[in-house]
Length: 93
Image (tube, rainbow, N blue to C red; front, side, top):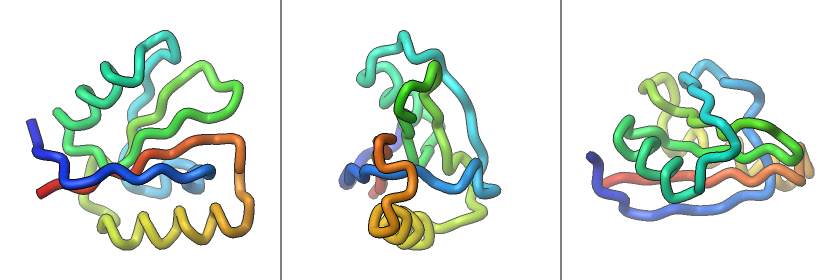
């Protein structure tokens, strides 16, 4: 399992899977379980869409860097893209 350096929260989502790899988990899972699952896969993002039945684990491949993903999330949040969704961006040591 990876070691987390930081987790940042954004009120937005990425544009689909954005080519960064994606897995889905049932919304019945607690956040703590989703976080452990994401860390085991070294995922960079957890998304809980508003009204969704799923958690989305994204960034499971190396197609985009942490900084590229962060930049897109900040831009999306500034543009109020899917502002009722919550995204956690995870950085690792």
